[in-house]
Amino acid sequence: MTLNPPPVVESALDAIGNTPLIKLNRLVPEGSADVYVKLESFNPTGSKKDRMALAMIEGAEKRGELRPGMSVVEYSGGSTGAALALVCAVKGYHFHIISADCFGKEKLGTMTAFGAELEVQKTPEGKITGDVIKAIIARAAELAENENYFFTDQINNDDIIEGFRQLGEEIIEQIDGPVHAFCDSVGTGGSICGVQAAMRDAGQDTRIVALEPASSAVLTTGEGGSHSVEGIALGFVPTHLADEPYDEVRTIDESVARETALRLAREEGIFAGTSSGMNVAGALEVAAELGPGHTVVAIAVDSGLKYLSEGLYD
Image (cartoon, rainbow, N blue to C red; front, side, top):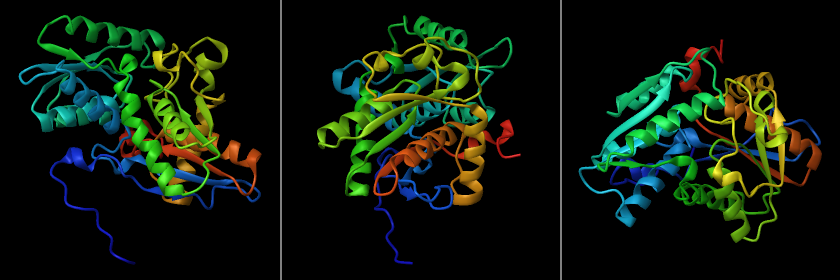
């Protein structure tokens, strides 16, 4: 093996991005397109959300909306909260995060490990629903009425698109050829928008495929429902997806997403969560349709370490 260590950086924030792209081998049936997975667990908190967290904080700093001595507030099911907690810790901001007990304890624990003030709301059934998301949004907005608080407001914050544009630019450089399709499950819609913008600017005619759980298919049917896939399917159409920055939407059963996540670990050595399983399941569908000579990319959003208490790998 040739040694090629990454460069020395000035802080953990400089380690965000430039993640590996891995070609799948055993999961991809013969006669399919090539499938590549962007391994976002290599970011400092083990998630793609580090990109958007840094973009939101630095965007607010540049505009003078966030100043030394202020607090940052946000709502999150885990990964965005952990990412913002990291960024705030490095930059010296107090961070107040609103979450709920339907999200994984590993993610909630990561936020407090970085020093965040965590406020957890109780949910009736321990399931993720549109009402749960709206409740934690409302609480964050209430706190943001304090003039010393800056509300990052991830669903309505355009800075996240720029944060994920770099992800798309990395994919383009790593593939060094046409990217025929990009598959991603949608939460805020930031990564779909950012990658779509990067592909468009590079002159790529990439098919953007948005994925959502079959049990909460808001983009497909207009109706949300309960599900257990953290970080996606908010139960309503977020601002960044209002203009439909995708070419098609597909639904994936949670059971298929979980099985694909398990197979990723046991057949490809990629340890990721349920939404990553959903992304790869969608990519495999598209790859089978496109056939040889084409390239499909999906994101492994985060690390499977965040899901061990949920029985995903039992």
